[in-house]
Length: 376
Image 1 (tube, rainbow, N blue to C red):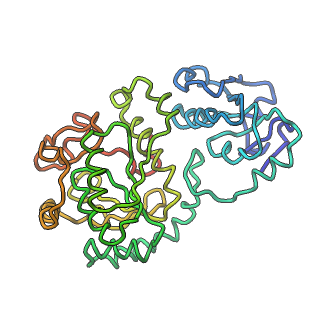
Image 2: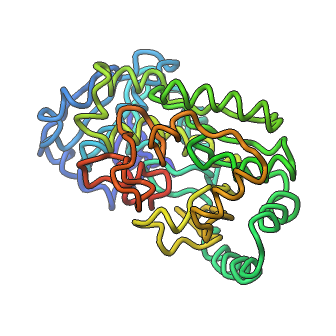
Image 3: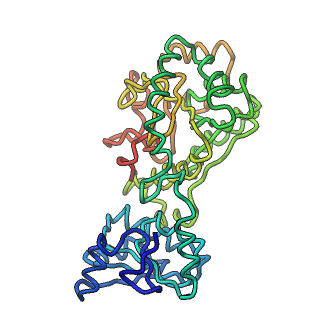
């Protein structure tokens, strides 16, 4: 709720009251220093400036310029800044919730005659559907009620085959509110073929990282057309964020986790709120964190359905042969798991499907299936 006990109208608080905002109290007593940043500042360039600041002001030159929102998120999540964060400049009440969600504690708008409008804007929504800096999506509130649902569905699907699981998920349990997450990789055709037999209009989300092999892009078009998939969505990273965070296109080499966050994790999170459940092609045979993969699970309080969880490599091969499905062009070159060209090599271990991913690194997953706390 908007609180003017600490500051005048030109400094509404977004997240704390006077009694719970120690930074504001310290500032009021003359302690600490304030750093002001332009909304187009690069978070990496200002790291030393903000590290010991008790308050950081991010200036919005125009309300239509969203770079200040991005900067706030980066200060909170990349630099771990936990001081007071204030938005100043050309701001409008419609932005109140967004300011709060990306980590701002207070605002100092140029216009000082809209107090009632700011108050109404801050109270407009009681729940949200996508995670942000505040880590408070409504899905988290639903998690408790989803737990018995997950247990019930795993029990129901225990004796079901993949086709039956998918049919129930798509036409019954999450009808109209479920999507498929597909990499259009080496094993993709199996699950997508099943889905095309059930409902070819089911949304298929393809994370277009801008770093895919040309063969993967070709395969995506070929397979979609052959299976009649009519609702393939290309999910791309934010162009402004990509230009700022990976200007030299070497982020994959200097910080692969940050690259995955930029090109996969955040873009997927931006659309997850549109669906109640997501179908994946993950399997226990992939090893690592997938060894005990259940058919239905929750990740960040959102449902994942893994109909092929218990499938073996032999079952995958048999399905390809039985339905004469096209193979990914790189499969015959030894690629058994295919991601971005920057971080994928032919399998280095014939017994490990994912041994060609992030070779020589401890990294084994991109992060889209990781708990929120583990994401960069």
